[in-house]
Length: 187
Image (tube, rainbow, N blue to C red; front, side, top):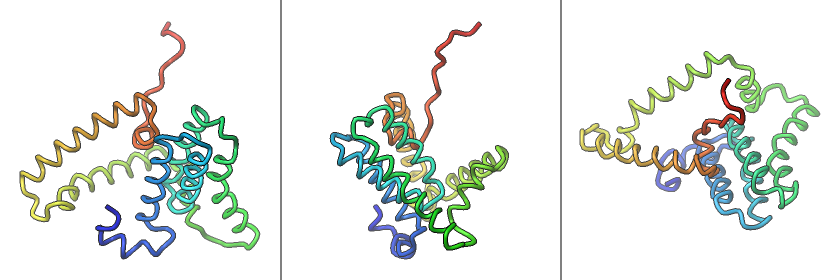
């Protein structure tokens, strides 16, 4: 998929590119799908850490990685966590030492400090853009058959994502947070 998208060739040379972030994210999630060894956990952590400094949204991948490590991978030691946090911590330390004024990681701080209304507005704007231009990514004319086929694929994807999120799979947790179960009964 990355190889055939024209945008990959236009933006992949920049460290802050979406294709690079997508590649690192998919690599991390793939390693987390079947983490059978400490090496797989280390690979997932390294990909997560690099994704974190590539795009601000890497914070959500870091949250999923840490959750999965805490639940399933603590036997692998703390090296994967260091690999996941190391690049961002190193960049922030380097930035502080050399006095770099602005950084792409400032977006992470703004995201964490942002108001709920701004976050919701951003989600709504991106959802609207996806609805408006999603079909055009596959069919420039926007034919009805393309809309029907894509709607069917989206429904299948939503069903599979919900099923995997219920099982606690990392890739589905990255897409959507499942509801938390309360340990106490309502009064």
